[in-house]
Length: 553
Picture 1: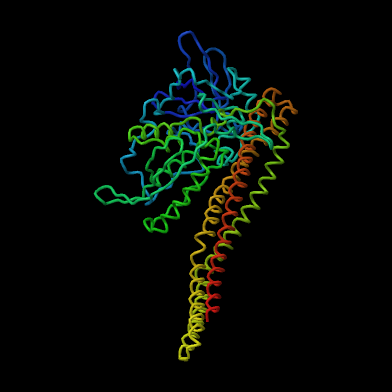
Picture 2: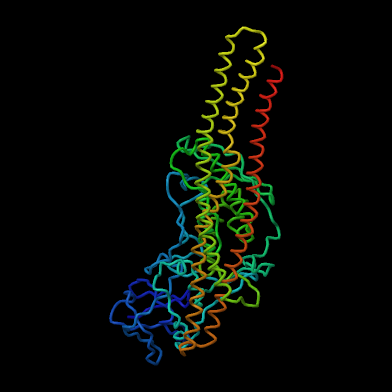
């Protein structure tokens, strides 16, 4: 049966269709392209249908046809490209899926039901046409496959992971290291890693900015049938205020996680099905979003990416939808993300990289345990202040006031001053109890908000380290294959070079994490201690006032 093949090799896969119009995917290494003067075609003679999921070995039979015969040898297929998720082969799964629920569904005027496949230039039974991309766009390919079967055979000597659901595979790290990534990178998409005082680091954003989140207000639509909270965002670099709902943050987070496999995207506050319009919840969510925004604007890569800038600046409904579709069709995700990274010419010492990655893994595990412990301790401490301490101080205050009332039964003039002083002491202790109840929101809560944000970061890093370790493993495998004569040295060098790119990115992200960690915890601990000092000074002042009452007695 004749099969028509697409000429475009995307992440190691070719799409084919048979005479019945059925479509499917096969590994590109199993197909040999034979061009003639009029067209490029692929012929496949099999005893069955075009694509039934069987594994075949490419055995050229001479002439203009390529015949395929079943081969019992099992070989792992490369992961299908994300753009082909509507075809018969299994699609890549990402670690994050936009959560669905009652909290701000996508059902307002700033959204529509269109899909990527419905848009011009999208993927709907065909590959995108990448012609006429403009002068600022250039093609990059890491493919080690050439135009002949021998090269295809050589590139397959580094085996793919058997677990196709591992983070290394799903992130696109494996496909990139094995040379299966290709795409068109615009100058504006390039991400630079430089060498700083302490190692690789992301190139700083030349135009730093911040963004405030204010005035959460309850709004309605559908004649009051649906309500939601809108937040006012004001970036300093535009000074234009935009209104965003929680679902917009949720959508943005999903896009960022999909796009940046080795960058720790800060987690947004969790959804809540009930109590979404209670004042305490709104205040707590706003504080969480402020911390999230702080980490977004502080990140040299995340702060500059197009989808984040679109989120911060777009006020027009039509432009929002266009930007939303563009972000959802972004091809520089997964394996192709690594094509956008520009590194120094000098490679890193991969043994040192592995040692640092292992050390950071131990560090994050210890930090995660400590964060959980501090969080639990402060939570219990705050609970005692709000309930226990307040109650105990009020009991002491009431006991003093009771004593004062007993003394008032004595009508002697010289005892009036003392009675008043004791009564004031009781009032002072009651006030101190109120101070304890009010204090946690000023010092403990901000620390716990910070810990919650860092718990999200710490949950991200095992996957990031897994991608790095997976790349290093492929380098070791390729070196072993060279020693065994199964792989050419130039191909192993290509694997090493691509691992080096991932290593630069991972080390830069680790360096950034440490910088913001020191910045955040230094500032937050200073704030906590200042608030504690002010708190005890307020208690001291109240008790001193009570003490002075006895001077007048």
